[in-house]
Figure 1 (cartoon, rainbow, N blue to C red):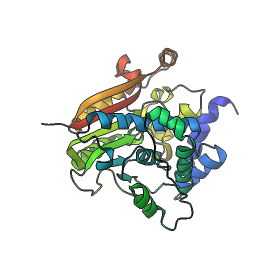
Figure 2: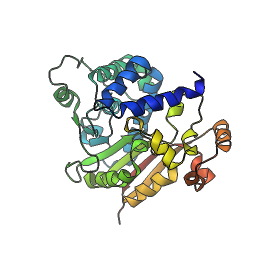
Figure 3: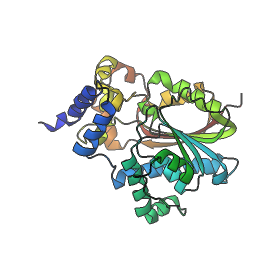
Figure 4: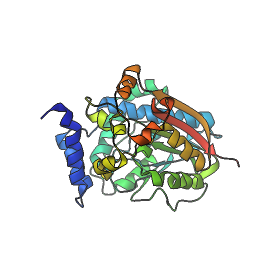
Length: 313
């Protein structure tokens, strides 16, 4: 099979699996046993840990109470391996509520996160410039693993839970984070999710969002451009997209507008830009009509990390 079919094959398989009632489990089997993308590699793990440090640095910079153990954290879209909350625990956070739209957490992946945090402790401490807690014990044979997480690491896992309507207490959390999640959320749900975050965030609280603007299929298939998905019309992309690997294709300016619309004020942005070589690839792509409306400066942003607070108005 020609190499250019690699990402298309993944699209087709995930589209088929999305029609099955247990599609998420089947997709996990495919990812872990066939593609071997789970557990994630050391490189990917360190990439995720760098995201955590980006959140943590915003917290330290903008939180009123710098004592991490006295602050309550919240993360939506926490994922299967709980890398973010367990890394936060290693950094000293004592109280976290983390949620997902469906219960996708995997005990074997939590176990792998324990292992990586312990095995790479010295290297991770060099990244974080902090001493890390890695007092992790096996969770595999625990009769109540979620209770174990709460009791031993202060991580309360809630799923399924709708991020648009969490029923969590108003003005309860000191810090909210989202790590490479919003790019996988339907456009119509982003503002409601952010408005809910505003409701549950304390008046002096801080929220940190990281958003990856690449075509995520280009991570899997190195032969396609990170702009590949920008050439498809909404109708064509709708046929390609599935809930198992949903990508909304929103650009930097879209997210900034949604953040402001939701009643947040931007404290700081950290932007990563596409390389000159990648931007040459963009010139060769015939953009779909909706993306021709974006400026060149808008399209050249690869990654967004933004810290926000509630708008005082």
